[in-house]
Length: 184
Image (cartoon, rainbow, N blue to C red):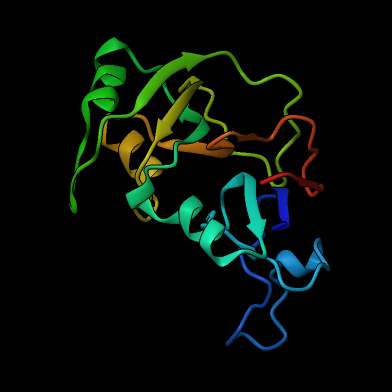
């Protein structure tokens, strides 16, 4: 039976087990949290993003989770600058034109700040003159920094990005930096 691990990746951690090419680098990697041999991340989560990272020891499962051709939905909680109106949310829902082409339609909705949210270290920058708000965004693609580029394209730059769900697996019950075994 394949091993499947759900990990709540903290801000500033690389989605890999080594930091090759930067000898003596102070950057944290997955090996600072997970010491299980033979598991690898199914997909990536940028160093400046937080939340659910799925790891497995099964190459086929890893491919089914991470390859965009399988259209595995990924849901993000996104703290954005400003308060998106219905036109901005509709643009996200119908697809946004980026430099590398139009995105597939996404599920997008305004949400309250997620419950039981851990503090980010370091905290986001706060501007007293500009409000911030939260949206839930579900995509089935996996372009480089796609969510950040999508929110910026509709006029609401991302301040904090947390992946809350990958397919059927959720972040529920995992504190930042914690992981647990689950079933594939």
